Amino acid sequence: MSKVFVSVGITLDGFMAGLNGGPQKPLGEGGLAIHEWVFKQQIFRQHLGWGNDGETGKDNEIAKGIFDRIGANILGKNMFIEGEANWPEDAPFHCPVFVLTHETREPWVRKGGTTFYFENDGIYAALEKAKAVAGDKDIRISGGAKVIQQYLNAGLVEEFIIHQVPLLLGKGVRLFENLDTDKYSFEIIEAINSPEVTHIRYKVINKK
Amino acid sequence: MSKVFVSVGITLDGFMAGLNGGPQKPLGEGGLAIHEWVFKQQIFRQHLGWGNDGETGKDNEIAKGIFDRIGANILGKNMFIEGEANWPEDAPFHCPVFVLTHETREPWVRKGGTTFYFENDGIYAALEKAKAVAGDKDIRISGGAKVIQQYLNAGLVEEFIIHQVPLLLGKGVRLFENLDTDKYSFEIIEAINSPEVTHIRYKVINKK
Image (cartoon, rainbow over the protein chains, first blue to last red):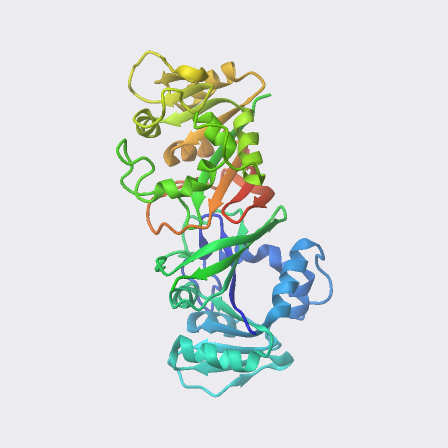
């Protein structure tokens, strides 16, 4: 049975992107640094078609474990617009991606198995469609912050993973706000660290 | 040689206390929950004179390791005022405590080895005095947030430990703000978790 999970990079001071992000500045001011650790990993470089080099340690193993379990992604329109301008032709998802948007658009098929579907009927409908194509694999709520917040508040997220980097951005897009925390709590499953990133995995306990 | 370190409880959304803290409401609205894990530990209960019961697992070991290394504490006036109204006669520090304040006051000796010294000459002078009495043990910058921020920005902190609980407070006193991050960076030394708390230890690399 597919699980719905979040896996997101975040600074020590709680930001998942810098300010003023957009197609010309993906992840905003200073935001790329949040993902510096993953850019070095072999699995990520393979996924982006950058070659087979890269680190193969603990961080790579964790990143690989996450990539391997994803059967479908859900992401918001702003994240898509940033990515559309910057992803290579062989887009890095390699599975179906559902984009929450008001725009009507035919599916956009990319090399390497990524197809973007533009979903106009809200978060529940997008999740149903993602589940229908994910098979036994899991659904990743990829971002941005507002999309993650919506899925959490709707009680639809079962697992929550942060990749917390010891970086202080000072300002940016906060992950942990607009949250209706009466509806759920977190339990820590495990924390694993390298010098550059702490991966913390939580079970989300949705209250009835 | 004494090390200067911070060890602080913090929520997943970055708060080290709730709003409207004071003598009548220590740690502010919802803030006590940040420390729920430690209230259950044997070492903490012993330190507060609550008896020898309590948990003796990984969290207790970590708390004990921290208590054992402290030769002197430094804390701000607001934290002292909150504590003065609430600590038992046998105050929980069991070593010298330097309180940063503008108030002139004679040292206040408590049962069990805690003496509060009221320090009027700023953070550097307080640290010198703390080092003079700490022997081979370490100096803990205990809080509140502003005091920790001042010591970090002055380049005086060498180790930084957070006890991050999977709690979302929504609002409160932020630890990570007012920070001059051009002056230092963090490197992760280790992350250890139980279901209730992730202890993350950082080395602070002060830039010249």
